[in-house]
View (cartoon, one colour):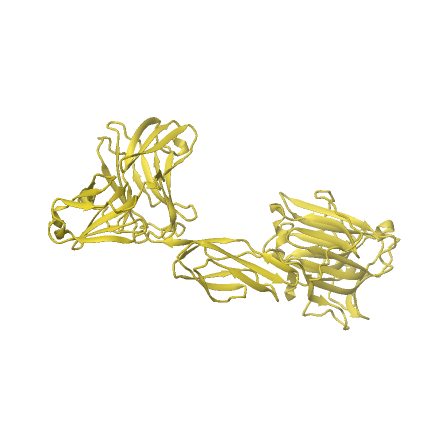
Length: 596
């Protein structure tokens, strides 16, 4: 009922028969008008007043029986020529919004006999529910199921139209012309509306189709309410003239809303879980549907099986959650929601290995006009760089083998050295959460790396300045920038990085003592016999443990029984990366070695 411009923006599909009846539609709302008097106030409310209604219309809408009355099995809306509240015409406009009558998708239809004549503008249409909730027209969306502008040949023609916002009012509509005058007989006017399209019907004839999958038509995936009215005059039909006969009536036999084919179900729930956690997943609640859920083999549905919402005790492995929804229309499969298991670090401290499966696990973040290469120098990572574009933020990135909770291992320790006299201009180390977020107020920054050619230790405790976005309990990787940003400089060089240490210890206030906590292991990598240079504190009774990458304890010794110098026969160990720690009272000394 707004201003119209008709254009072909989608392909018209015109068929001689109603093709969308699928045998599975369910009547979910109707008014059959099998009563008398005022329209059912449990289903309809009146909009009243004048003011042109945005189209320079001439009528005053009232709630009087003389303008809207149910009688003889029909709702009769009557437009009259009479002086009323400063207007020369009266009519009625009924809506379903106030009574909770709004729907998304389905078949909406009415059987009606229309008025006729110059300046007469009957309509059976819908507006987006959001119109009354702060969204202006046309952003709320409008669906005109049937409109007619009367007078002459126009008395045989109806229009089906959609309006939406796309940098202004966008619309699409087509018309259908009947051989006979539409005031002579009842006809069924309908739309069939699903997540893909809206189709307009005159009786059983499909005459207009609109594809609503583009993002700009998102309004048509929200609830809409129904409006019935007769306008008099206005921008589109023009004003009544001497040929116009009053009163004019629109007779409505029924209005019906059917549920349509349900949209494909969507599973919602967390994207991460911890082993043995109970987590919830859900999908749309569709009446009379059955739900068949699929979850990883080691997870268990503890409640809600067969419904649209389940509680799951998660297992030890990551995997997909999905559901198949069966209705009278058929079976529909949902998306697969991947849920990653949140792991804990395998040891404390955790020396994150540079290599996985014999390959360097760090990745170069590709940037324009910067060259970076990675290689191993013993157990250390060697980074060769030639930075010509600092503003492109040259960096390397380490993807973890899953999602890790680092809330109790939030101290990151970097031990690195640069070429003598040729250090990067600046460096920055950060943790990256499961959503790719970084807390820019919680970083390890090295503004002037030492260039004496020796190893230096830098540490930072993450999580001390939370921003309520970054998730320290769901970390997927680490990133190290160098010669980056506004303060970055052009230049070439190299630096070396020992395995990053993640620990629960607060060693940031005593970094000079940190080296005494790191064991010296040699040769490293080792083939058979590993020598351990013991700290002074461990010369007495102490416990030595060896763990694999998964945190499993493989060996445990009392160091007093091992003799000096301490040598371990590892000939029966498989190739891989291992962690060795020595516990002396409340102190822990640790190191990482590679077994060939």
